[in-house]
Image (cartoon, rainbow over all chains, first blue to last red; front, side, top):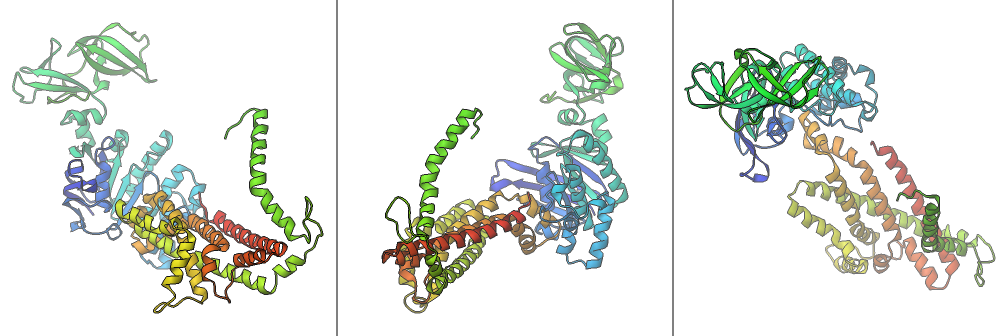
Amino acid sequence: MGIRLDSVTVAYDGNVDTLALDSLDLTVEPGEVMALLGPSGSGKTTALRAVAGFVRPVSGRVLLGGRDVTDLPPYRRGIGMVVQSYALFPHLRVDENVAFGLRARKTARSEIRQRVAEALEMTGMAAYARRHPRELSGGQQQRVAIARALAIRPDVLLLDEPLSALDARLRSGMLAELARLHRELPDVSMLYVTHDQVEALTLADRIAVMDKARLQSCGTPRELYRSPADAFTASFVGGANLVPVTVGTGGVSFAGAELKVGTNGVAAGARATLCVRPHLVGLGQGPNQLAGVVREIQWRGATHRLYVEVDGHTVMADVRELKAPPVHGDPVTLHFMPDDAVLLPAEVSHG
Amino acid sequence: MLVHSRGARWAVWTVFAVLFLPLFALPLLVILGASLATHWSGVLPSGATVAHYRAATRGEALQALTTSLLTALGASLLALTVGTWAALAAAGLRKRYRSIMDALFVLPVAVPSVVVGLSVLVAFSQPPLLLNGTRWIVILAHTVLVTAFAHQSVSAAITRLDPAYEQAAASLGARPAHVLWRVRLPLLLPSLTAAAGLCFALSMGELSATMMLYPPDWTPLPVLVYAATDRGALFTGSAVAVVLMAATLLVLFAVSRVRTRASYR
């Protein structure tokens, strides 16, 4: 079942000056995983709560599978939801937690037993059915929360920062689990709210990038990463060097250097922002050279990250671990391939 | 308080003992001593006897104990129901109306209980609601007096309740009534039992409003204690007071057992 948000606007406490969500248009196709990615306060959780029915839009419509649910209370929307704090009922055992939605819907007793077993089996929690939530670790509690949401066989699954409370190792494990669940349930649409670009890039079919209550851009992870349409998306999805340039013919000029990049029909003489991913910047001689001075160097195990000052702008470069890394203050030369740069419209730089 | 050095810890305990023993523990011990004595002319009571307890656990006194227990039970259950209901209803209101509700419920404790007793007496002494002369007027007055505490502790617990639980329940398809019975009330249970215990204890000790209202066939225990000491039977009064204290503590202990079993985190 698909999800459609039709210019949904949300204002908390009727305060129209500070919108929590500013006319959001978003469509999630049936069976698709859509990640809502953005910093905190960007409106991504508000969008999810509007779909769940916990906030009422001041204008706009929410449609589930073509049905307008804007005026329906949450319990009549048939949505599975998993939140960051798990929200498992502490007074109920794991199997009772999973059965909760089925009991609320007055499902037949024999079917409840079968569906609970199925949901616990699917999340690998069958052995813990008789325990209470407080006896489980964070990762196990999150599995139970997912089992509880899946037991009602929802067509739409909403996930609100489901992995944020877990440590890094557990998180990557759960990410793989979620990807597997999605393969096993190909018809379930998922709306996945996160501030973590790795989760979004790993799991999502498409990513909607949000900032300041607005949708910034929406596309497949590859599109957003390879050819972001704006500076915010470029810096939030994957990190980027963003430098102001002047467009010439067949290239741009930056810091007195002529760089060969595709100008994509932008008129010569215009101001623009050049975006290059740090790991695509190389050290030493090559095409599109930039000369600068090392301001900071961080060793990250497999890579070194260099912060190089080029004509007053900082350019980041991630290079394979160096045997003899340059030190602070050394002059260095950077380069990048013409294909690896993207020209963005000039705007306030986030880099 | 964190006290690290050994000397300071001793000093703190000494101050505690000097303050606590004479103020809180000794008066209760004195009652216990008096209840077991026939004379008290020296420093310590003399003439040990259990005769007062024989009197305090049968006949009129036993009748009064049952009366007190039933009154406290009725009043605390009523207060808990009304207070919880009001607190749950107020939780859905806007902040301004919620504080009006809070103020209304605090009113009976802000007003002296003699005033509450008198107002209940005046209000229910004539038709259509003629309760004067029945046990119901005592239970009603106690309910009015203790509901404030039930309401206050339950509404404090409701504000602490994480809305994520109700939202999770609602997203799973539970109607508001189902959410209330299966999620909110079970999660509030520890506060509900605490509130019930508090109401029970307050009702067991209520005297000033009761004095104006009690009918002859519904005499609660505090009235009996007062009557005994008033006519100079100090030792009998002490024995009845000890029975009152023991009965209250016993019920509170039982309630606290329920609470420890009902707290989940």
